[in-house]
Every structure is written in C-alpha cells, then in structure tokens.
Length: 188
Image (cartoon, rainbow, N blue to C red):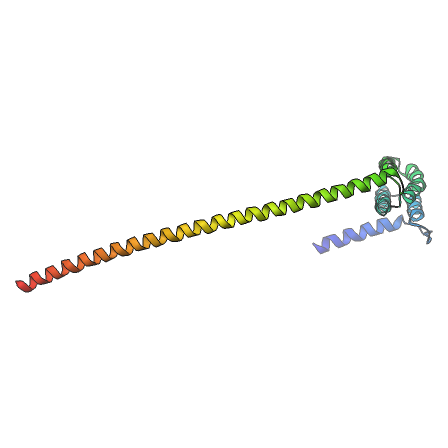
C-alpha cells in the first residue's frame, strides 16, 4: 500500500510546487496565497490553494480576527475571480459568512457570548439533574436487586431443605426395605 501511495504523494507535491512560483517573499500569508494563485496554471492546484485560503480565513475567524479575515478576502478574491472564475463562488460564500460574523465590541457578539454562557449553564444544570436522577435510579435498582437476591436465597434454601427431607425420607424407606429383606432371608 505504501508503494502505491508514495508515488501519488510525490506527484501531488510536484504539481503544487510547480505552481508555487519563485517570487515568494516573507510577506503575509495572504500575499503568499495571492502570488501562488497568480503564478499557477494548473486548475487542480489553484483549487487546492483556494481551499488553503478558505482554511486560513476560517482560522482567522476562529481566532476572532474578523477584520483581518475581511481584508485577506478582499486581497485574494480578485485574483481568484481572474484565474479561476469557477472557484469564485466559494469565496463569495466564505465572504458572506465572514460578513455575518459579529466583530469585537458589537452588541451581537456580546449577546452571542451571553447566550452561550446561559446555554452552558443550562447544559451544566441539565447534566447535574441527569446525574442525580441516574444516581437515584441506581439506588433503586440496587435495592431491587438486593431484594430479589434475598428472595432467591430464601427460595433456594427452602428447596434445599425440601430436597434434604425428601432424600432423608427415601433413605429411611430404602434402609427399612433392605432391613426387611435381610430379615426375611435370615429367617428362611
């Protein structure tokens, strides 16, 4: 399996490397992706760079850097529209998502944080209630099992006593019958 995957991985690395361009500088990641997309001619590689750019935007959003994400999209989007118009729709979707994300200091963000806090408290309360209910049910089950075990023990003890008595009775009968036969044989 490794023998098959290694050549495929090498071809993919070479294809991406062919589009990376030689003019990469130590600028921001935005300009790196922009330059890579501008210099690339392979549509599959452009699609890979667009996916990387979307992931970078998501990373910025996750870090709370909404303004940086918007600026990055504004820089890269025209290049994507120029080089790969079919992929521009993906950037439009990402851009509309980023525009809807509240920025720091906005009322919407504060309300979202408050709602998240309330939801977290509700979840914690529900978890505590579920834990208490489970402990209560466990206690009930434990008591029921203990009661049933006691009943089974008593029933087994009763049956053992009955069996013991029956065996004792049969043993006495067999002993008496054997004694009678022995007496008959001795008398003859």
